[in-house]
Length: 141
Image (cartoon, rainbow, N blue to C red):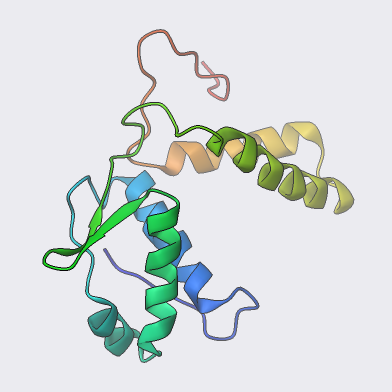
């Protein structure tokens, strides 16, 4: 996994790290059981404070994306699409989605443009699968 952060971004560095790890899992670059670099190693590689990496890893742990063990370090907890989301996740995610969709509306993106872009993003994830009994609402087929 190649992790890139933008030191000039308004998005905090810990959030960028969290977001890139989640994207790598969705892309299929990190599977369940994949080890992440130690906080000190990743901080050294990115030339940032290790507390920043620790904050990102703690956020991922609280979200159930990784588990942290003193011996094995940080490890991906589950594959993308490996089962039902934890209780409450969908509601919290929908609240964040509402804000993103409000931003799109304020900036003049119409419904079809938003749906098209959502489909492009979902299609970009290598780990994306439609399981039996599911319907792909964003596909053009």
